[in-house]
Length: 411
Image (cartoon, rainbow, N blue to C red; front, side, top):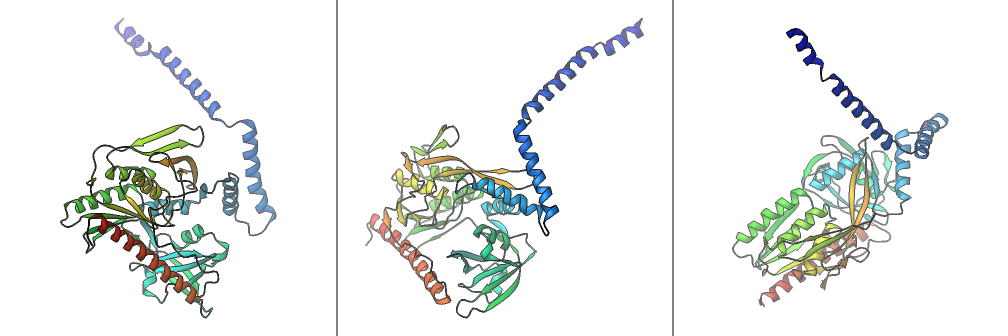
């Protein structure tokens, strides 16, 4: 009898477990059914797949990957949104690396002048510095592809890549039209997001290059150094040429300077839902420390949020030129093949509802407007343009220093 009871006890839960298993299977089936695309969408996706298979069968030298990328870009273009874009897997990896300031490159800074890619600066840690390349040279070909067929983002993506690999660049010398080719090795470039120096006038000049999780930590450390530095009696935060980055980083940094009030109000572009963020009472920087924020025509997105929040709360005086005017929030969505979509998910206002989109941040003290690129970029025209750009930056810095000296009553 004991053995019989043991066998009964061993299997008495089977009916209950069977019911649980059937319920789980039914729930899974329902979930899969609900997640399944509608019939019309399934037909469209099947048609798209058929097109990708049919075209290479009837045309020579057709790259299916490029067909797919072109289709994805067309989808994004149909949104009629200048901020949304499709990123190939390599572009997505590059975007992630740029946010953190660590990427493989040859050490050149490139600017667009009337559709041409002009070298404007050589970085000391890059391979390009060891050649006779110089500012003013125009890049016409990258790895066998003419740059006139590439967008500026595609050009940068083509030049950058995995450290240790090589890239072939062909440049044209504007004064002679002569072309020269270079085989350059990509090196790991680790660009510090924050640098600072104490100017002779007793002013701490902080250059802030991008907004990332790392840069928040680095800036906090720099501000603590400045706080403990004897002789730092004023502060310049330089956001010129800063294209932005993580808006959450901009909010955290604004809170380092502000003692209260709204930093930003974001509104969802889908349903209009709003989210507000306010500064805490504590601050990392003495609220009485005189402060200037430098901006220019290339300060965008998170840079504008930070500058606008500090300006709107009266915490800093803005010096320089009107900013880009990007008052929207982008989010990056990864796709299964390693590519990604950058989609606009919200717009924002700073402080007491100061609009940024299409307007930018207007400086309190206008100074050093950048000259437009030359219409016909020859060597001398480009050199003059670069020289005027450097002069504009110098003028902006000088205005900031003079203003802070006046604030401190120093003549």
